[in-house]
Amino acid sequence: MTDATPAIRIRHLTKIFRTPTVRKQFVTAVQDLSLDVAAGQIYGLIGPNGSGKSTTMKVLLGLLKPSSGTAAIFGRDSSRVDSRNDVGFLPENPYFYKHLTGAETLAFYGNLCGLRGADLRDRISEMLALVDLEHARDRRLAGYSKGMLQRIGLAQALIHRPRLVVLDEPTAGVDPAGSRKIRDLILDLKSRGISVILSSHLLEQVQEVCDRVGIIFRGRMVREGPLHDLIAVEDQTEVVLHHATPALLTRIRELVAAEPPANTTRPAIVRIGQPRTTLESLFLEATRGEAPRDGLQGDP
Ligand SMILES: Nc1ncnc2c1ncn2[C@@H]1O[C@H](COP(=O)(O)OP(=O)(O)O)[C@@H](O)[C@H]1O
Ligand SMILES: [Mg+2]
Image (cartoon, rainbow, N blue to C red; front, side, top):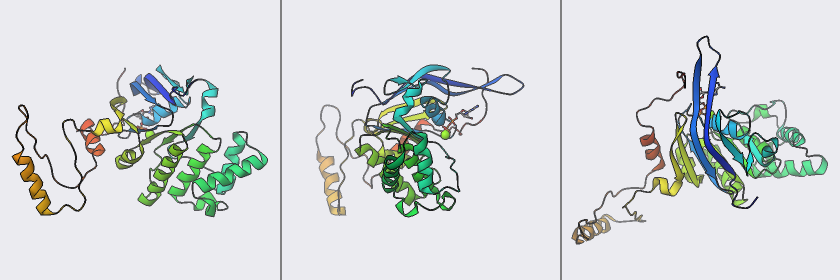
């Protein structure tokens, strides 16, 4: 294995669920989906509810068998048990024992991963510090906020030093301050060389942390690529000014208007105003006019 081995490689993944109804019915949750996450990258999978994000992650983790196509973690197929040594998982709505304290929860998961004794104790302290829960280490999870629960979930996912973490909606139901904390944690993971794939519908947050983005809609990848390429508008140049006065803007307008045309095109100002979130516009355009899907489809 070399450094060029991607953390994740998914090729032509299709997952069809057969539903136990009287009539034979199928749900195509994911259809012909491919993506790569390079080692050390943060990848954001975004899409409306029911678009196949969780299903894709579960196949990647070997929790579901693909109907066709493949998924691999650091070059090992997801059907292999040893592919899971390198990955930590924070599920959507994780379930924890509410009567355990934060430290006990981490001890439980650390034990499952084979950590014992001083090694386990050190690792628990290190993880509690990382997710900023040292103050709550001896408090029961029943008293934790949603943001604290997500952070203990993140610590759980990291306890065995994985090289890849899979985060399914890590900030769902978490307030903005708590979300910011989780965002900073994700950036911290990146600085340690850990690869991350996360799903979210919080587009601004995805835009702030992700290197690469896939927009998934009705099980299909509808846009995919490096964040900067996806949200770049061709033939446009952005100039962002600090403390521009109305007089300066007037002079800029005059300067542009006086510029002679080059060939058949001439420069023009598209917009003067405050910078906006552009990933959100891209997302809305890619999924325009469609209600979220949660019903059944016919035979595939
Ligand atoms: N175990 C299952 N059995 C039948 N249908 C399922 C199952 N899991 C997910 N689905 C369906 O697959 C589609 C994708 O679901 P999911 O991957 O959970 O989407 P997301 O995570 O993007 O909200 C949905 O239509 C959902 O109802
Ligand atoms: Mg989901």
